Length: 128
Image (cartoon, rainbow, N blue to C red; front, side, top):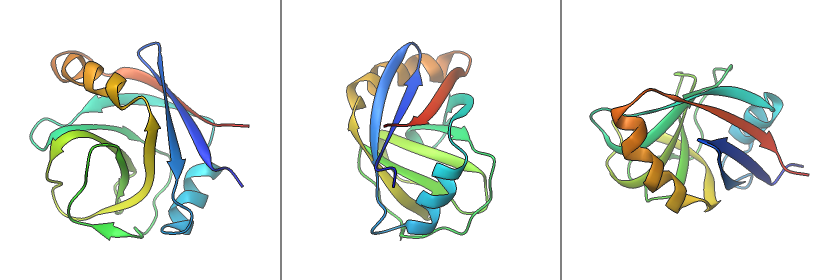
């Protein structure tokens, strides 16, 4: 079972831990599509949130209305993974399925750059 995933964005690397005990279906669907290459962009109205598209639709598990920096969620039926890196109140509930364990500072640094500029390529892969 894959417990950790590596995200590479803007030439930098972040690491997240999958929450199998809280969202096993979402974790399974996410791992099945790895490795994944996409583009990370910034939420324009919600706050400190980066997101990228994934090639699957899934029902959300572990739905929450409030998140903290480092939470990683999936918006139900939107093919979107969101990484919350600062102050934010999500637009509705999000399925919390992972948590950043390294690189939150990197995303706080990259966030304003991504918000003002173009999306950046992101590569997501399971760690061995």
